[in-house]
Amino acid sequence: MFSNSPEALKQIIDDYLKGHVLSHHKEFMDFKANFEVKSNVSIFIQMPKLYSNLYTFSNPETKKSILENKDLILSFNRLGFQLVSKNDMFKTTFISDHNEDASLMDELEKVEKKASDDLMKEDLDSLRFKIVFPDSVKMQEGPYRSFYEDGQTIKSEGKIAGGKPVGLWRTYYQNGNLKNSVNYKDGKVNGVDIFLL
Image (cartoon, rainbow, N blue to C red):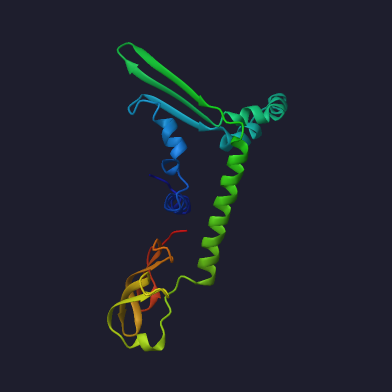
């Protein structure tokens, strides 16, 4: 992945970590399985995601037609086109998925992504991810683990030095899934950190 924009790269990484990429969508991966792994040209389109650009960059006459046929256009939620060279010819493949509820599913996905992004922003803005120790723990040195009320599920783990978190600290949700990985240096957040929702 190459980009001259650090913000674009961060967004791509965040989307990947949150599962907002095509490789995490079973329906898309099933659709992609209909095509050759190696090809000269492969194009995959998610029409609900392309629709606004299709409309915006069309001339007025085409815009009118696009608007009148919006539901029909959106119902072809996935389009795939591929060219594979064989000797002096190209094998051409064109496949479409039709789903009358595609626009609704796209809206639900947008709402879910926005909620996920809002939760992450709230966690970052409120600094809820920071490790806070009880006074009794601050005197410890070395590896440390805290647990949820059940006494079995790890809540956080890392290393304490001089009463402060140092190195890589991980916190977990109550179901045991990783919540975040945060690097600390002298008790302060340092470096690249990963947050999962």
